[in-house]
Length: 170
Image 1: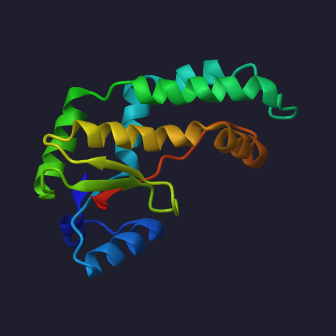
Image 2: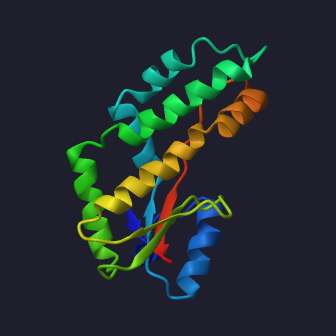
């Protein structure tokens, strides 16, 4: 994970992240980038791909039963929100938040760089448990009925590509 200040010395960011982070850096905004690899590790370490595959097994992309899909999407969101990150990952998250120098009590926005208005707002209280929960709520949005239906329509699969998540003052 990177703070916005770390971005200058890091590997180049993907275009959506680079544009958004550059804009925020220009404004002097402190922040944190939770990379797609961090979310991917969360899925892998929690065996979530297999659990999600089993959950959505009754859905046939060629003929989607929306009435069957809707409760499965709700269960998938709950699975993401209630799954745990590994202790090492949590500690990395907390240390990165500490390096970002957010003020205790500051309101943070948590969102995807490519998601126009879908931010979670949370008060920062060290070490950052509420911020971590907000990140997971943002990740769970990828499992809303509309998001899953869109992936089924576009690619014939519920699988998704993980993406970065940004945290910065509101």
